Each structure stands twice: as structure tokens, then as C-alpha cells.
Length: 72
Image (cartoon, rainbow, N blue to C red; front, side, top):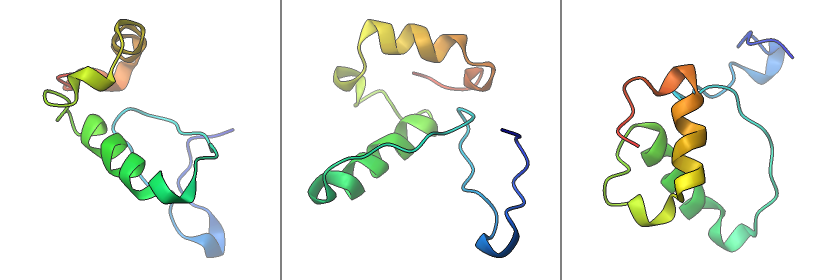
């Protein structure tokens, strides 16, 4: 998989500060809320979301080269 954002007729891929993405299946009833939480974490607004991130999550985020400016 390449990091090329050109996707032909589908348009550019959504951009995330934390890097590459993968598709997951979540219940439709909470999909928008989860996407909102993910965007806030991606933008470094995790201070009030701290309870949602486990120590393992924080360690994994700290390994990413894209988290240099993230307050996660």
C-alpha cells in the first residue's frame, strides 16, 4: 500500500495527522461519535479524552513519527 492520496474518481483520501488508516466495522449507531473522538485525538485534543486512552494506546501513539505535535 502506498501513501499516495490520489484515488482516481473516488477523490483524495481523508488526511490524518497520525498517519495511515485501516477500515474497521463499528455499529452504525456510534460510528459518527467514534469518528469524532478519533478526529479529536488526531488533532491532539486528547486532554479531556485521556480516560479513553490506555497506557498501551499512549505507548503505541508515541511510536508513530506523526505524533511529534500530539498531546496524547
